[in-house]
Length: 504
Image 1 (cartoon, rainbow, N blue to C red):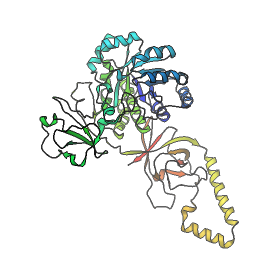
Image 2 (image 1 turned 180 degrees about the vertical axis):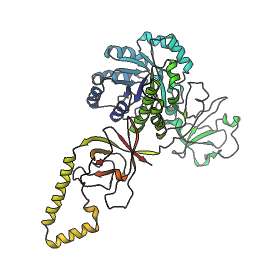
Image 3 (image 1 turned 90 degrees about the vertical axis):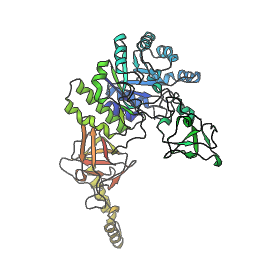
């Protein structure tokens, strides 16, 4: 079973490949349903070409899954040469109008049907096969039983299904809520995730007045909060007097109406099928997809790695015990309550949730290349020599004052790194602040770090296991944060591509 991971930018693509994805899907600016993701633009195709050369067995899918207006098609046609710069193996589309254009201008690329096309039956799959599609990314509403029936009816069609991540409450993601409330179209790639907001249920006054969405209520039409009061009965729910106030938009109100058996605002659980991969494979799923082009590098790496190990265990490449520590790491990523969606029926999918869990970890840094020990120690020696020369050039009184100042304020003259047997230097690309007090400085405890890698679940380092070093001077550093060049000096077996985290 193939594993397809999300890549909202180059770094995420790198980690998707490095942490075990067989393929990754990206979007190019203006043509993807995740326009708020960084996506790819300018000359980034040059880096992607080099990355794919390093991973010749990995595939690259390009999402062109917006609903195209005429102007969008014209823009796409005007940028054909730019698209050709990317080493794209497949295009993911939902708009049937793009079929002939892709086949004409990119004959070497396969066609994948986007989940946005809500294809969940065998007859539709047969038709898309006739149109030239190689793969269908099934709508999330398809059950495992239905997938098995589709595979039996069209065995030559590749079937891809989501296995993990946030699921849109709308039918196959075809949502109008965001557009209605905020003017940002989900089908145009600008979803505001309105279904996930936190709402207050209110009743407008005077009774019977209808609001247009959104609007500010005049003072005399102040809303009445029904939360904590008597249950809202069906008559009131259907009266048109109810409104919602989102907690981050106080004073702005949206009308809400409840019919016989539906509610207008819903937030679905996150999908997690890692314990049910055997069922997915038995149903005929050829490719498992992870949602999350807008998620972090940390999320992409840990989720991709977890499913890589779980699939490898399913296929007998490693044992289930070997996979278990990596699978457990799924719970160290931010997520909502997990569920199995529609795969075993609609009951679980119909349970709603709100908010998101916060990960117990912050992503601190990424480990880069190893740096020459001799080079760094030579720089430290030079720093000490330069300091001594500066002191010797001073008048004796000035020198005494300088030395007294350094004694009172040692942070002005930090110690330099010294050789340690078995220790090595690595580039430390900082993302969040950590502390690593220099020798003799106990003003703050050192941050306990954990290093994660494709085949290392978590390698823990206390303050005694590492030092932070200024690469320009060889001086030890008390702390580092994003934007500060830094090396990490340690005896631990680090490697490029490792991520560094610490507890929140």
